[in-house]
Image (cartoon, rainbow, N blue to C red; front, top):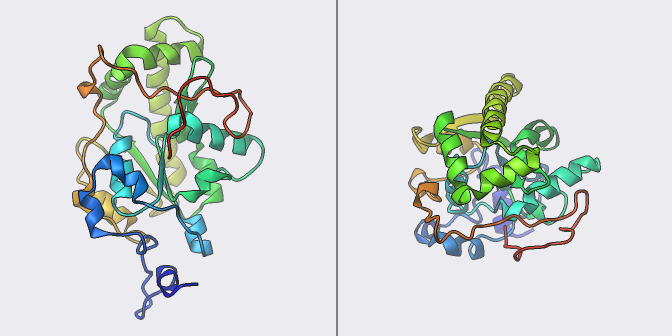
Length: 275
């Protein structure tokens, strides 16, 4: 083990815990263009039980600042996976269905996970619902329930992909009426926002409910501080649906695979992007 790695995973001279991302933390990452961050943050190395069981999971829904959280974590040198055209959600779902660790496979090169969802005409996977299983396997992890006003979130989902996302969601639910889709989203939102705080009520320090529109980024910094070094100035609002031109939208469409197939199955559209 290198001296740097030993420092990363060991207490310092005062007995304090050294941040798990110390080795990858660079002040200059805050100035790197968002599109270049994937190539600047290396895969994580898990050389201790503490590192393997201490992850960061975003467990709110998409259209609640998931990309802002993703880039914030990357700018701290934290290896992070975001959406990956839905393959992230499919991998976790299939691992759990097979009785395996949720992060088994290439996705286990990451510490943080954001936008764990996929919606196709066949299924809608809301990876935020896996918070219980993720906690069972990675009990020292940090869970961020990113949220906003429900009505604004519904409007954002309706506008996402110039309306294509809502239409695809309706096909997954096997309904033709957009009002039925909205009702499903609303009920799901209320249930999830009740179940998550209840589950973490006896797990202090594991959950942060973060209002993406109103809360100060320093709350994220303070929440992660026991194990990770982050900077409030590295949090920036990114990926606003309102900025999408519907006449030019082609979209980050999901990769389709057969349910239950490992390794991505049969892809029908697009190329896989790096997480």
